[in-house]
Length: 153
Image (tube, rainbow, N blue to C red; front, side):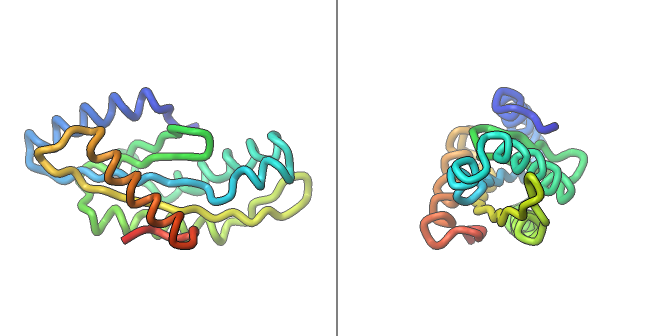
């Protein structure tokens, strides 16, 4: 029960406009389930789907009503955070990371260890949504390439 990529893109345009008009912060956090291919290879696509659903519920529990939580790729998710600065985005991402790490994921009676990596960016008033997205994606890459199960600072 999360939004899709199209909804995220529309929300980014809308929130970017609002952020600029009222000079309010807007942040984006990109989340990626670590080693998701291994989960699919081990437990099959039904197991992978079960993990995706539990992941979404777990992360959703750490968000506010006004946040936009969307799936934008296979195991990739985004959180659009109106009125949240960079420090707040990092804190929320870290909270979600800890919740996922501690959550008892399981499928077919077997425990599945799940972790996530995250990167964040806060809107620079001179950029477009793609630029903000690209900066968050670069941070996500840093988190994944420096060991996974972390939020890039």
